[in-house]
Length: 324
Image 1 (cartoon, helix red, strand yellow):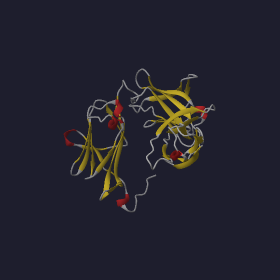
Image 2 (image 1 turned 135 degrees about the vertical axis):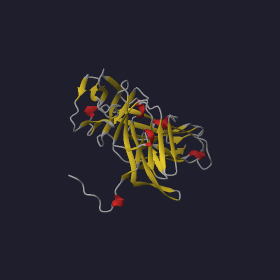
Image 3 (image 1 turned 90 degrees about the vertical axis):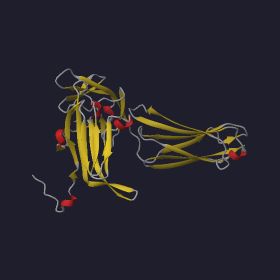
Image 4 (image 1 turned 180 degrees about the vertical axis):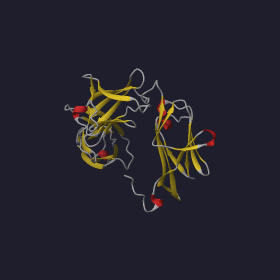
């Protein structure tokens, strides 16, 4: 059934992206495009203030093969000598600016997913040989074994016990732009897996992915604080430890308030974290911040306050250290 056109034509989103072909021809882009690795591509997006998005690794390595320019009437992206690793989403949009504040114009955008096919590299190469994927019961998990050839047949395999994992098209699906998606991860899915791809030749194996199951409450950090001793003698060494248990892929930032802070009393603060297995197949991240007070003095007595912060909020905890 054909969708009705919006009543206001100005509200309809229009693609501003084209591909520059040979002899000055231009081509509107479909949702996906397949090119052979080694080819160069030039994309243009109409507008005097165009922003771009492209596979992040091109930024990571500050790749000289990539050139982005803004000309009077269009933005230009050129990628020379493409490789299988360049496979991914390329998009652009018009920026609407008022002074220093800019926002994306949702009605003037363009996007295409480009496969740079390479028979020798059926999987999009990654910088590592092993990746951790966290399985959270609240959100889908992605095993990112993307392919460079959209027609490749891709299967998912468990390393031990050695078996193919069935993709039922509901709970586990294969998305050619993302990889295998677990819509409802459970602890049964944990373990080491890999992907296998076939396309007119010998099958190829992806890197290995270690699936870790996570089950911790969402929200501000779950924080505790302890002191090595709550009573100290002059010249003692005291440690105050702030501990957070949380999701493995959620960073925690620590800050401290302590009695000698205003007088710029020298202290040592160390932050570190590690993953722990709680024995039931659940993985948790334990993050710690330790403040060390050497040669305890009278000015060091008082409240030691730790503030732990993540993207969902902050938690403040305190403990008191007194002078004997």
